[in-house]
Image (cartoon, rainbow over all chains, first blue to last red; front, side, top):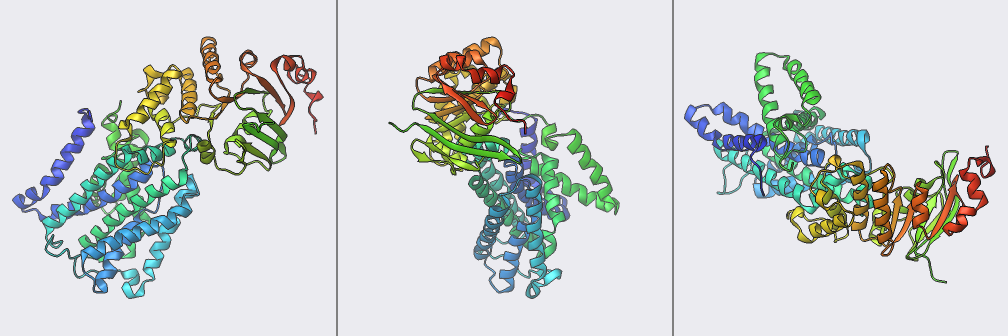
Length: 315
Length: 255
C-alpha cells in the first residue's frame, strides 16, 4: 500500500498510540478514573466500528444496532448466573447468538429499503428490549448483576483493570483490521457497490441480498463481542443497553466521526463519550450542547470529523 | 428453423391504466444487430427493463438461448449472458472507472465471498478491466473517479461495464444519448466493431446511427411493434412515416 501521509492517517496513528499508552499514563499519574472511562470508550468504539461496516460501507441504516450489545451482554450474564463462568463458553455463545439474531432480522429487514429498513430494525431491537425486560428469572427490568467476570483460565484476568483494558483495545484494533481487510476484499467491493448503485450491481450479475445479509451478520457479531465486553466492564446487564436511544448513540458516534471512513467511528466514540462525560458534569442539560454541535457537524462537516481532516487516500 | 437467441412473446405490462407494453412480440437472431426505435413514451425502456429482469411483465414470455427466463431475477440473467447499458447513466459514481469494470468482471468470476485478499490487486480482474477500457477508448482514464468523468466518458464506461460481463446479448438503451457529434461518431464505430462479436439490441433515437448499424429495425408505438423489417423497408413503411411525422392518431387510440 502506498498510504500517503496525510492528516487523517496522522490523527489515526496518534489516537492509536494514545490508546496504547493510556494505562501507562494512568499508573504514572495515579488517575484510575481515566482508565475506567477509556475502557468504556474502547468498547463502544468497537460497537461503532461494526455499525459503520453496515451503515457507512454498506448503506444499511440500521437503527437497532444496540440489540447486539444486549444479546452479547445477556449471553455473558445469563451463563454466569447459571454457573457457567468460562469465557471460552460465554464469548462464543455471545458471538453465535448475535449472529443468529442478525441472520433472522437481517433476512426479514433487508427486503426493505430506506426509511422502512430504519423502522424495521428499530422495531426488532425494541422487541429484543421487551423480551429482555420480561426475563423475570434474570432480573427483568432491573437487570442482572454479574458477580464474576468471564474466566479465561490463566490466560488473562478480566478483573485486572489494565489487562481488561488491553483485551478491549486488542478487540478494537482487531475489529478495525478486520473491517479494513473486508472493505478492500471482493466481498467488500460488492457491498460498497450495492450502496452506490444497487440496480447496476444486479444488472452486472450480483445477487444483492445475500451479500448484504452476510455483511449484516458480520457486523452483528462484532457488536455482540462489544456487548460481551461491556457486560464484563459494568459487571451488570439490563435491558437498558438495548433501548433505542443506545442505537441512536451508536449512530451519532459513526456520523460524528465520519461514516464510511475506517477510523472515523473510533474518533466519534471518543469525542461523543468524552463530551457526554464532561458536559454532564457541568450541567444536567448537556444534551442541549450536544444537540446543536451534532447539527453543525451534519450540516457543515459532511464526512464527520474525519471528513474535515481531508479526503481519503485514493485521490 | 433455428431458435433465435431472444424470443419475446405476447409481452404485456401495465402501469395503472396505461399499457406500456401491449402484447409485444419480438425476436433477435444470433449475431444480428436489432434496433428498436419509436417516439417518446413508446415503451422502449420499459421493454428493456423487462428483458433484463428489473421489471416483471404482467403476462407473456421471454426466452433467451432457448430457455424461459421470464421469471428469472436480473442477476441470474446476467449470468446467462444478458447485459445492458442504461439510458440514464447508472454507474458506481464513487468508484474509479477501472473499479466499475473490474466489478463487472468479478461478478462473472465465481462468487465474491472472499473477505481477506485485496480485490484491487487481483491481476486477472484488473487486466480484464484495462483491456475492456482500452476497447472503448477509456484506458487513460482508468483511475479517475466516475463522478469526475465527462458525460461522454461515462457513456463509454456504461458500454465497457456491459462488455466486461462477456455477454451473448447486449441491450443498449440509447448509448448515444447526450453525446456530441464526434462522440456519437466514435460510438457508432465502436458498435460496428462490437456487432461482429455479440448480438445487440439497440434502442436509439439517433436515426442516422440506427440506419447505419441495424440489420433489422422494430418500430415501437404505444407499446406495440407496428413494423419489423430491414432498414430499407422501414424507411418506406407508411405506418412508420405516420408515426414519426406527427399523425399519431393513425396508430393510436385516444381513449
